[in-house]
Length: 233
Image 1 (tube, rainbow, N blue to C red):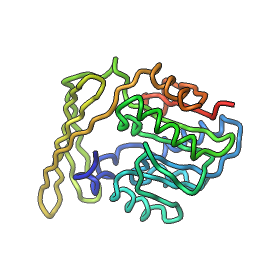
Image 2: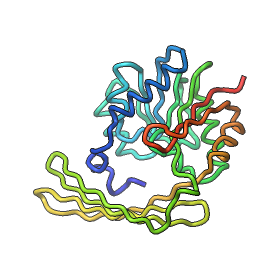
Image 3: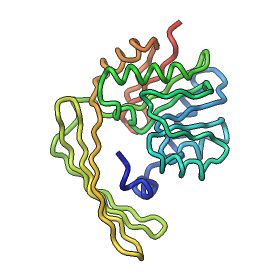
Image 4: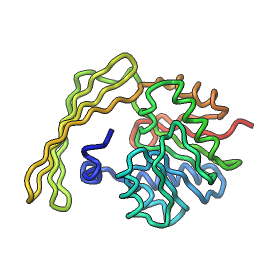
């Protein structure tokens, strides 16, 4: 998970087009033919999507990482941001939209926890609300041994990240090596991320087990797909 690199998260993903993705999220919601007001952003990160959604919706968020929540609150003080585990959380409010983007759902790792997590989403959904889940990669497209490198610069911070892909059964493993350079020197961080690899059929089954009707858009925001779900009537 993003522990060592939390303070640099926005540097790492500075090339990610959050504005365009927020526009696509709005398109999904408009296409439902209903008026939505309140969004819960699960695994909200540093609230970059909320920056572009807040002119149109009342956005709250949860994340497991306390530093992300602190950053999110500073960016979007109107929202309510809470440190919470997506697999087991209880908020006092329900929402018109519960969304989980940027493949964060993969961190649940197992089908049992996927179902449990989707039940949490449903529990926090208003009647006639909608759930949006952007999935992680499917098992058939995960490439063991793949190496990727990105370099970015933002606000005086230079970042280089090299990643190596591995796999244990249906768990994908991403090993990251970071270098962060600034006028104060160079920092080196290492992280390992483990995410579950679920087929489309397994994802659909999990939504159904959670009592949800679901549609699958294979394209989604960035080519990883999107699941659009509602409570089964």
